[in-house]
Length: 247
Ligand SMILES: C[S@@+](CC[C@H](N)C(=O)[O-])C[C@H]1O[C@@H](n2cnc3c(N)ncnc32)[C@H](O)[C@@H]1O
Image 1 (cartoon, rainbow, N blue to C red):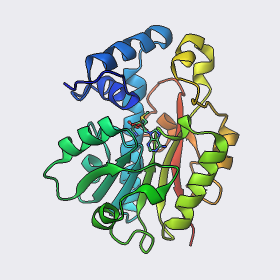
Image 2 (cartoon, rainbow, N blue to C red):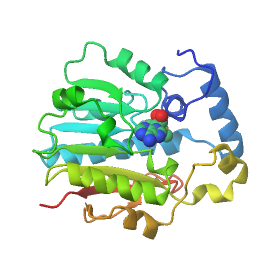
Image 3 (cartoon, rainbow, N blue to C red):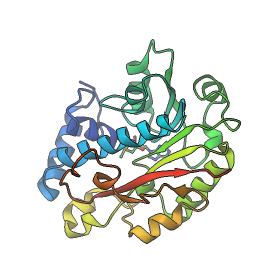
Image 4 (cartoon, rainbow, N blue to C red):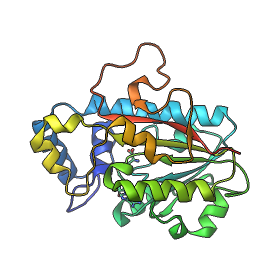
């Protein structure tokens, strides 16, 4: 259990995933949100399963190191647990989350955690980048951008993804998700998301990718991105996919 005075979306997700890295305030916030929306655990379990499928696809395409933005809690099927041979740098802007992540990963020689503002990749510590994402900008890597776009406006998402595109080597992969318009039907839950929160239509999501080229599936409800068997029946809250930095 964690001690915290303010809830965090990252630790609420840990709670919904059945993890152990959350505080009483996170459980209270998660319970209040579910009161306004409905059960969230199945939705976030499927979102994490999508992360797993996306990361495995990137490993199959040759990615052996990953840079993760807005990483949240590095457990419960997060990137280094899926890509068991890869090296991974998790980044976030929230100091409590960063300290928690550093504690969880203490002793790991292939996964680290540090500050990184997704909207300014220059804020990632070059020494950590060099250590955990060797050859950044010179060899293809996986970039994970999940759970972040929903809290940025369109102009910022488009600019950020374009900057990552320019910085990453050709052949790099991007896993990305966006929030659909599901919450529009739940005004109380929507109000709990705060003023920065952005719902988006699929056509807007695709346009924000700019030069990144989605794989054939495109950007789709995450349960329908390369499902293993029948897609899990959950609300289409999150849309996502994998895109390639062309040569
Ligand atoms: C909804 S959580 C998602 C956590 C994780 N990616 C997941 O999918 O479970 C969003 C995370 O993004 C972080 N965050 C918000 N704005 C950010 C920014 N500009 N750069 C990096 N991280 C950010 C928050 O601190 C939080 O940990």
